[in-house]
Length: 162
Image 1 (tube, helix red, strand yellow):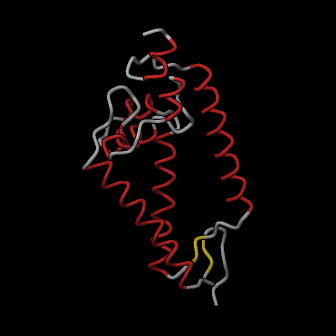
Image 2 (tube, helix red, strand yellow; image 1 turned 180 degrees about the vertical axis):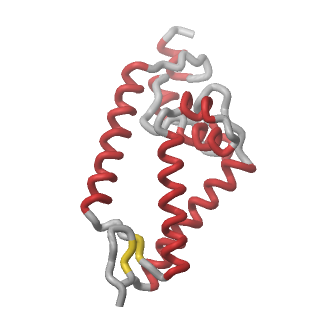
């Protein structure tokens, strides 16, 4: 029997393969929706509302972005080939979409080759923990330093006496 390496392990269950396939299929759905259904919002956030989802509560209540504000716009911009708009919508967006794509394709490779994509290694844990810290720190900095000053944001309008 083959030995596990840092990325794949030959010891895999059907449930693990189904999970990897699900990960790939969600990525595929996100990619198809972003490429063919959505259009990047010009004001750098709110693209998700084209799917009937509500506006971000952080934006509506505080006129400030949450850590994820602009990710849908960023990813959609990447899929439409507008990398400048993608980085302006969310600086981490193109990087996150690239990593998501790599992990989804690795998961599909594992399904085809009947290998488990290893997520239980020290490098995977450290990478994920670091990514979460960077994402939240970036979000906190953005929240503290960014206001949209958009009159469509009802609570902001009320606070301004409009």
